[in-house]
Length: 275
Image 1 (cartoon, rainbow, N blue to C red):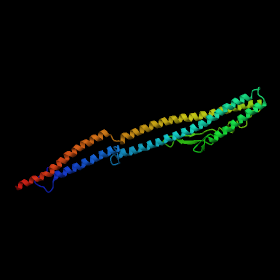
Image 2 (cartoon, rainbow, N blue to C red):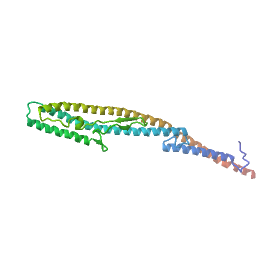
Image 3 (spheres, rainbow, N blue to C red):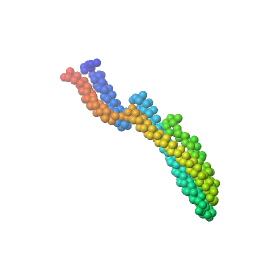
Image 4 (tube, rainbow, N blue to C red):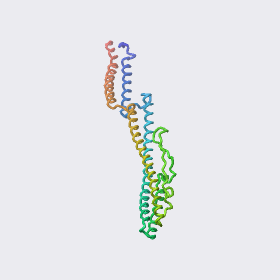
């Protein structure tokens, strides 16, 4: 609608310029907020659907991050258990060597007794290793660590159940071996060989768990990256675009200010009628 410059009670052009200037200033403030926060969506009012989607993706990413931490904890536990099993395996290998030595007919009873005492001390060490192999004060290889569930994903169904076999001297069947005679040394060789096979099976289980955890870790890391990439595309600001918009609006702001100044000076032309 055209303005009648001879009516000065209402300066319509100035009012229109003020309204335009206010809208431009609001837009500039919005873009500057995005530049300050680094986000395109700072509140639901800016993009309700995008805001809801971004929050859902953020929730999933945080769940994946925690699952990744859980996997790391599980790997640490298995590393401790593997260390305990490996130390016991070294002892069993030494015990097998000593049993083989004691079974030889060239040794006398005194020598076999000395070897038997040495192996008895090694068997005691096995039980001490079992007692010391713990994580957060929880025993790992004494047979009580059974069906422990690790949350390895952000869904309730994404879990891994871990059971670690008992490896104390009684469970391995070596708690009552004797090397005091050639016959008992021969029997001990078989008993220790069976214990080595049993412990090897325990170590195999740990290895399989670790392989599964490594696979889960790789999948989680990939999911975290992809989820964050999608969230960023939806929610994060494009700095180049935002800065370009600010510059364009600042030019419009300056032209609006100039137009407002002209609109305010227009009614003064009426004074010429009274000269």
